[in-house]
Image (cartoon, rainbow, N blue to C red):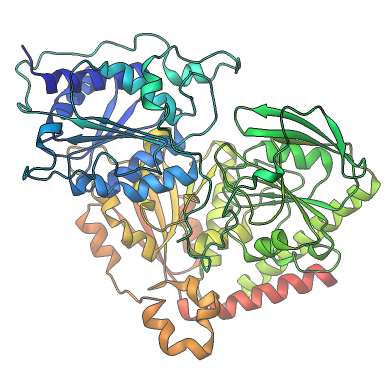
Length: 633
């Protein structure tokens, strides 16, 4: 008869199958061996796919990419000790980015904790406290319905509360599994059953939001009284120089009371219909009747509803690359260079914010203006701006009047002129820059239409370059970005996970430091399927974003180059050869256009050689030209 650890591992894997989990990322280890044997059996039966990775940090981000791109989360499995600690960056990103992620960490049983047992720490079970939506320490395998617990945990990652109803808050869940010796099965003939009922992604697609999605007693054990509060604040350690912190805390004072009757507000300009939306938390539906000059800011994850608001209402739409708006007739090109101009940004009276905007300092200044009303439509668990604002569950606007159409046309015309000026500067610039690379990638993505490869864009300079040149008015494949904490880590691995989830090639746009930081994302063993990712690498030999900030001023030159730019001279071609990944060197935009158009969907790295030392001058030339064209035509 098989021992308790083998039976526990088989129950866990059966729960993954029952919940509809399709991908598991496994890192090797002795304490997690029972899970490895059970996962092998499930993969042999065709019930899920296992992806083996050596580096736990890369594994965590690979699983994060699956959760970002798929209907169900991936599970990531590690052994004990520092292996678990290496998952923390992916867990923090999943928490702040609202991405489902299941963490299965093997541990010693309770009797061996706090002893000299190797690779054991009492810190492990609570390693993600505060970041995980729920953490469960299963130090003993006695009397545990392992499959039920796992299904409950997967449900919690997808926004299901303890009672089976949807609260909308997605994120990571941690199960720490105490496994005792022996760690190998007596019998290798076990095979999990197919899903025993509808899997969670199917149940969650049910439009009947009032009905519990799953009758799980064990869900309460996973997401019950110990469930931490939902994201009351951003991590204060986030560097405001790179990504200005727009969301230090939710303001409960601006939440309409769902128990109050509907009432007129704001001098009878608007009607605030209070109710509770399980996907957004307490809030109200704001019906806008006033003729205030309004723009819509669409941050990461805003979704198609931002287009559904802006287009009928004739509100100018200022969309970040990963806002997910889809093709919008209200999308304004090169918007960040218009926000301090008279007749445009200077005349804004109200901003409706959806998603999480973190890219642009001009947007940050707009949201901070005391003369501008801010209306925030957050996803569940998402924080809001650090100023008084109205937080509502939805916004609807009255039909546009003539002055609204004039307002929108003014923005669209200025955006077209500004974008044309940007193109003119780039066309006359000698050499390849990040803006040239971003423009080529944006053009290639738009040529595909909606059915092309998804694009994952890394943090730092290139995502801001893409923000300037991406055309939200045209249909194109989805754009993803890890904007929860906007770190440069894990980008290659996240792209790999996205490719696994979508079963399609993925294009990734990132800088050299992000690439080198996650070069282990290329480390895929010969027995593993290599996810088809084309990395478009802007290599300027260091961190160019700091040259665009105050640190790049001439007076700081003696400090900037070493302490901020952090120069590197890695032979990227040799690194790619070491990992058996094809490499191409690109020196002109025309060459890049050809490489992007001719991509066959296989893994490769396109290394674009950039000049970091001219980036500040180019940024100034582009800004001056864009603003001048917008004002004068």
